[in-house]
Length: 231
Image (cartoon, rainbow, N blue to C red; front, side, top):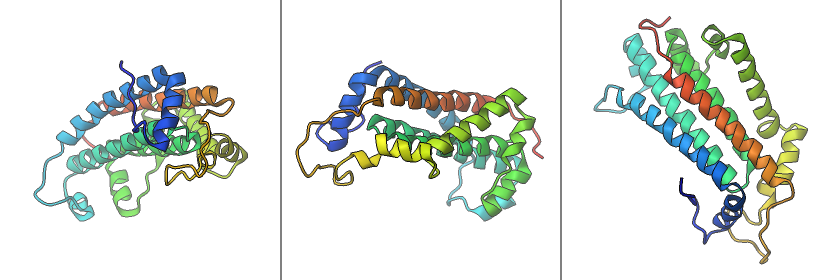
């Protein structure tokens, strides 16, 4: 697969990405390919949604039949989970590993919500009314070993990229936005030689691997057949 630069090499982000791709181009390309495969699955689900002349509303989804409600809402959530996984990929590409982990955690949670809503109508209704889903229900559809793996993944993503725990603070200090000069403006105040911090390559490989784990899980969960009647 041809190496693909996501950001313009003339920008501050693009220059960092070039450094990272020199070390991790193969891994990043594999991550990108996985995202493309997931995208095709998500597009199929979105294309199966019955089109409407006006935009969908919560009221519309609450009033329609169970199958349409579950199918429509889960397709939208699968697509949202993919977007967050893509955001994680982009953040790894420019070295913001803690932001990548935050997106991986949110992608995983959204993926689980989509999987449950696709099967359980009461949870689809609850999500529309309160924004919440009982994620423990996934235990009914996967093995205990797989459920334990999910819990471990969520905990790691929390530790590394979401809460103000030591692991997250440390990751921010080493490989987070604080390392970049005037990150929003994409222009450092003083001209400095761009270089990756010590240990970055190994840390980024782990982050990409975790992203790949979410992606593989995504491919599996989104392809599992759904019973004809939701609960």
